[in-house]
Image (cartoon, rainbow, N blue to C red; front, side, top):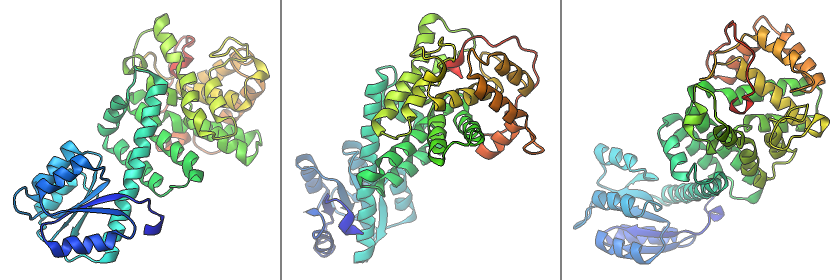
Length: 403
């Protein structure tokens, strides 16, 4: 396993020569190893060398290990830390966890234990660096409205999303070959999509439900398995460009003015730019870009009409509008399925592909089970109840950009 791990620079910090030399001998075959016998010496090395990982004894004279750990986290946040100590306590272990150390090993240690811990730590660092690079490029894509720090703040505010992010990083750590990059980035984008939903309770579960509806329609159209998979991916990521939309616009209860509408509508182009470098194939980025086009050519961003709009985008558009209309939004209550089906039929040929609208409404009204389709969507996507309720609502204004 260690042979597959990139060479890292490791600083071994221990005041005892025996453990220090043992660690150096264990690690030197696969990594560059530096050593320090005190906290002060370690800090001097860290200021003058690029270090990826430190192993740290807690019981040292002078600057104690726990104090050094806090200093490292403050001044060298990118360095991974493994505690290797014979002086471990429950309190010290808990504090180490709070400071985000990579591993905690009790002395006496063995070769397998140390090698495995170092491998995990190095791969975790690779995953984190890739995530930071991904978010940095994302920040460049969406502009100054939405910087990396804001995205990370949203992630950190939610234990669930933070856990999903860590899972994505861990998966990235296990995929160090280029062949794994598209899948790795899809997982990161999934976390990003859930981060967007977390900003607005009205949006929770929307991406998963749209992917589910899109998949059902794609199955009904007898598309190939590859086409169906690409449609589901595009449907799940269709709103990823909203990471560049200010939160107050997504949750605004009243009408948007023209400038605000321009900002919100840009999400389809931004989403395509975010996804495009991943080369996912199957027209995923094109589907995201065009999921707000209209069959009559009056949609955005490119004003495509009829069959010039990619089939996958026409599929995702129907699923997106159906879920948006049958779900509550800050600017209107939910509609019943019956009213939504009527409006889709009324808009067939103008907003929607008439053939697809016919197939989708037949799908919605079909007796696939004893439960309504929208109820099943919440069950299968795990997105909570939030079922549509009967509501005498006037026709929905043209605000599809907020769906």
